[in-house]
Length: 231
Ligand code: MN
Image (cartoon, protein in one colour):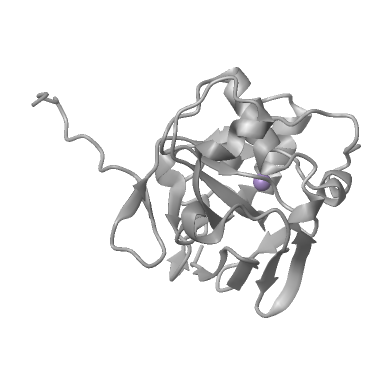
């Protein structure tokens, strides 16, 4: 047994649908823009850029249920509904044709974003971490194993706030489908079991306020519901 000088952190993990067992989280990769209409609403041309990535800490992923805290340092907390991919096997330089072999399962997540801090970071060419990687910035529902649901390539992806539709898209609108996203990441670093990938959000991102009820889902994967906590 290794002797640590302080207590090691508990293993970050996410629930698995229909099971007491949990999925251990290693790293969290996020695609920057992956739906054309969202790229346009953020002022970018979706046809010109290869995918780019940022990360969240493993323990930023929390259960997408109950209360999710309103983070500090923002006046403009945004929701981004995303299909989440859970990697179960290691792979480097994976071809898109083999990429789905690495996938253990799928979930429904929200890439919470302090948009005001992100706007400043973009303007000043600074990193995005403070806008994307705060505590509880990645609420995620229970994962569904690919062995049970397959590999969803089409179907609605949506998010409502207080019952009002804010985001509504379809997985067919992904600029870079899941297999391509896995291939791209695996060119840059070896994907490892436990890695999660937030695959990008459709158009309609907007502000969340304390007390807002968020419901969201991905057809064929699941639905989530949580409330934003007090400031
Ligand atoms: Mn996102």
